[in-house]
Length: 196
Ligand code: IMP
Ligand code: MG
Image 1 (cartoon, rainbow, N blue to C red):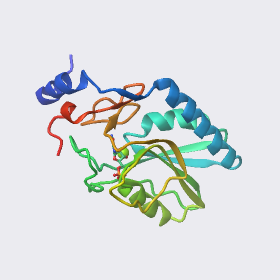
Image 2 (cartoon, protein in one colour):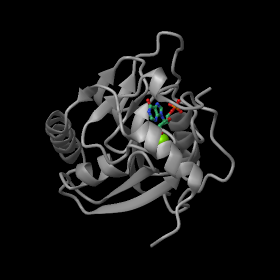
Image 3 (cartoon, protein in one colour):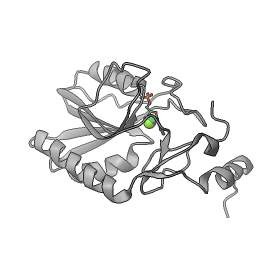
Image 4 (spheres, rainbow, N blue to C red):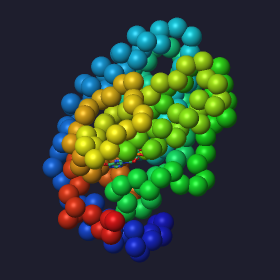
């Protein structure tokens, strides 16, 4: 049997057992992802498309989305982390981000799980833009209503606009937990351990 880290077992026992109320059901997400996929497929109806998936939160969304597309898709991954550990507000892009360097001349669609402050998407679009893609667009599953700030970046396709809540499930995590939930759930402040 694999050895388990004591701290992560303890965190899982207290935090993972009770995700909060369901905001978006598995079925509702599936219907919306299909719609988004069909809209994106209509936009990219010839040639090929490079889908740049932001790790790790967008993996499940992107897996469902790309299977609605009809053009040949290249999958690439951007390894970025702006919410280390138990953070619930972006701490800025962390050092060590890894991006593919082969995006010049390609039609690139960035796929992320959620647009919150916009720091992640803004940074990524700038970096990819420097490589000279033929076209560059972005799709996010969720967009948070943040009355406290003005975003400098927008997504071309948005699955759902949601309140400014911390959410988990369908790929989104808290301290790397809950990504496996089929729907999107609210994680209330009392359900988070050690969040700043
Ligand atoms: P931003 O840079 O503030 O827009 O944050 C975007 C990134 O933060 C997303 O790619 C998510 O990984 C993460 N994030 C933002 N809000 C949430 C949330 O409510 N739950 C889980 N992750 C989130
Ligand atoms: Mg992310």
